[in-house]
Image (cartoon, rainbow, N blue to C red; front, side, top):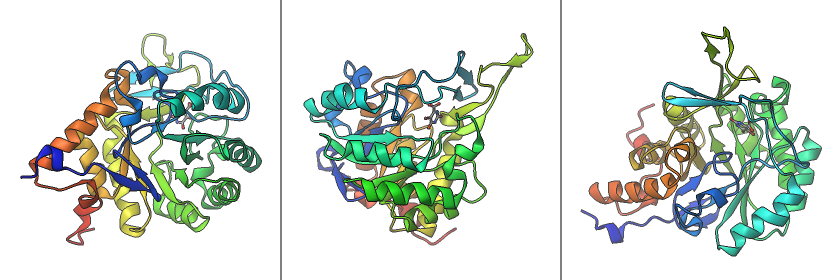
Length: 313
Ligand code: RRO
């Protein structure tokens, strides 16, 4: 038995030391302020901010959220204040609280991603960039760079040139072979991978006889997608065992987080869970620590990829 106090919760993600392996997930708690009444943002591994674009954006028409069995659909469409307001209001708020920021950036072209990365050079408190090449709620699938290895690599290589912190590529599960996309991003210079973004889904209202979301399709998240996410982390870790992974997709409990670590993630993001429990990232970290102690496991570093140990594929 390992005592609770003895469990090492620190982890390293793409060369960055984090005090906890549990982070927020992009898009689910803006830039962290909403969570402040419920947890100490500095105790999280990091706050992963909502994808920011160059300019302010109002997003898609409403309704843009819908509940589904064990999950939810969103069709937000990259609503946000734009990079200048983000730099003025959001990052300083996190830095003042000694929270680490993983800044998610999204662009419509390689050039937009490069400009965003450039604006973030030297910004206070930025630990990593998460390059969102996988937003499902865009006008055309051609804009989902993560669905094509070449397009994904072009974005990542350009961001790497412009950035002054390690870069994670955020991948989509909506591809034939996620390992091909992961390998292309790593080849292009990604320091790590975030997986997974939401799955493209839709729901139809059987009273109005119309799609529920104004945008028709949306991104599916929550426990419904957890087995898909664990499978993606497993496949990529098996193929690229040295590549750091930030895992996410339907994590509600410490045991869910443990699954991702066992599959090969070095840290995890908690997203959809905060909609009904805003303290979820802190609670998941406590539950994970308890689970490690119960199993006599000294620390997070001892379980990363452990489920692969007998070579079963
Ligand atoms: O803003 C969104 O609609 C959105 C984004 Br950027 C994303 O990456 N994933 C998602 O499910 N929704």
